[in-house]
Amino acid sequence: MRVVILGTSGSTPTKSRGMPSVAIIRNGNVFLFDCGEGTQMKMMQNNINISKIKAIFISHTHGDHVIGLAGLVRTLALNNRIEPLNIYVPAGYEGYLKNLITFDKAIIKYPIVIHGALPGRVYEDDEVEVRAFSLNHTIRCYGYSFAEKSKRRFVKEKCDQLGIKGKEYSILSRRGFIIKDGKRISIKEVTYIQQGRKIVYATDTRPSIATIRAARNADMLIHEATFTEKEKKLALERKHSTAKEAALIAKKANAKLLVLMHLSARYRNIMPIRKEAKSFFENVVVAKDGSAFEIERKK
Image (tube, rainbow, N blue to C red):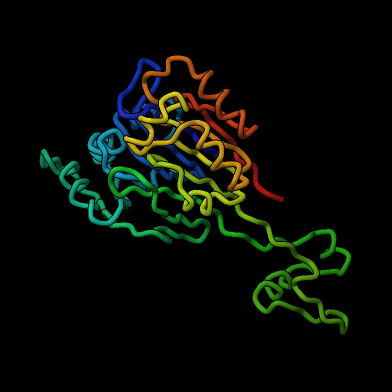
């Protein structure tokens, strides 16, 4: 599983930072979180196939987080996409996206399904689950947790010792036990639970208890750090977070890695942001456009 931070600026782009967007690539499928201006170009630059987008999750409908949708859906149409595209947005804001997508009556033959999301599970398949949680911004805004489902794995050495083979594996999985050589063997004796990986995305927001809960023991917390503490007044007024505040959220959540993005264009030098956050949480990265992370599978 790979996480690519496509755009890292907040509100306005800079020469080196584009508008907010994050891609999670798992087993070839792409899950996109926000779609700021230029997202499709950033995906191409980072060798991410836009045709593989499974779903898009929008935090809120401020322009810097959604304007890239207009171009992206048209490119997918020109690429002859057939599969439906599911887009999730806080409930009540579906019309904003519909207007953005249909404003010029472009010919888009594949289905675009806009879901009005509420806090809780918004997407699920056989492998992963995405849950929305409320953030604290100037309009309704959600963070999202992307989590793999836990799986039961066989311990081959134990199975070999007990002579388990062939169809006996499927019988164990289905029934929970087998009788072998007159002995009852429970599935718990020869398996373990492999916990799924979890990535949490939270922007734009003031520090939130909901984020701490969602990011509990997360492998990665992607959190906004629009300002440093020197601009705390602006953070309060505009309902954003400082680098220190993001770091404290990661610490309270016991996240393994904190990745900071949505940086104000005023910060040409990221060192003050990194230094401030690192004073409160050691394992922190201030993302650049294109920063990529491999999330190792848990044993």
